[in-house]
Image (cartoon, rainbow, N blue to C red):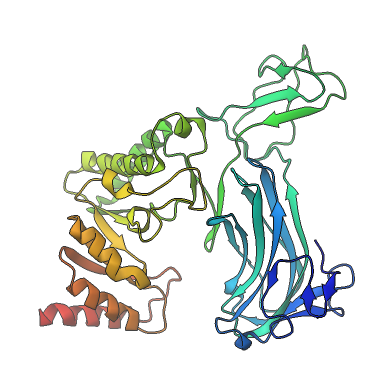
Length: 411
């Protein structure tokens, strides 16, 4: 896990690090532990400002792990491009942006993930798009997580407690009290008549909450096969409609990075594409039942075969390919991948969907938004464009409105 073994500027235990001696360096003066760390700087020597290191590790399938590393920064820019990743054979299991200041002393950063069916992974840390400053890494660690926190108890997520010393599976409610669906759990209570022996070694098999680490914080995944979810959504949608009487609704169904692993999903006999399509359809039906005049929009990526509607997507157990076949035809698709915009708009337009372009994305100017307008002009059934800011940057909103109005006036 450390950086003690090296040959010149090359660290022996790691399968790759960017440009030894140019971007990545052996540092024996600044360390978190031991005698050596790895230092990254001089990012202009790399065409894309990359400074990364990877180690290949064997893991057990269907287990929870915590990947951690210690990091130190000095006048590093942009710190927003620092990330931890865990890669599987095809695709990604976990991405976590690293939250540190441009200059900060040694800090441990960690992220949890589930191995699913994988036995060989790559743990990955570094910067994508560095421009100035430097940072150090030390103390890579990958540890199987034995915590009881985050256990999921619902239909489709059974729990089993058994002995590792003898052939005995214990009964919930008889040998131990019911395990609740709690984010924090310190221990499991034994009953007065428990068959569990003092000092007995136990193995717990259960489902844990799937967390997705993204740029805007850690998100908790829901199960699209859980019927209770739709009763909850229905009540929320109706209460919101009573408050503001919305006429348009954008479904937050993008970058769905986990799913398909519980027994509800596995035993449904449906592909993940069908499960996703039915989830979207049921939300659509909830809104239309409230008011048939509501227009329902959705982000494009989970329905786009050129984007995220595919196999081997993060921690998803299953394949999202062809998900677009299972959704209502009058959904309005909000395309947001700038580099793939023409293919995406064309794909949905040819299948009869109306489209919208999600432009801007907190850039320094409106050049990319003008490219979106040009693409939308050439797309049948294109109905609009959105000024899309995730960072609450509205400096160019007036200019964006003038630009769009100018196109409309010209037509």
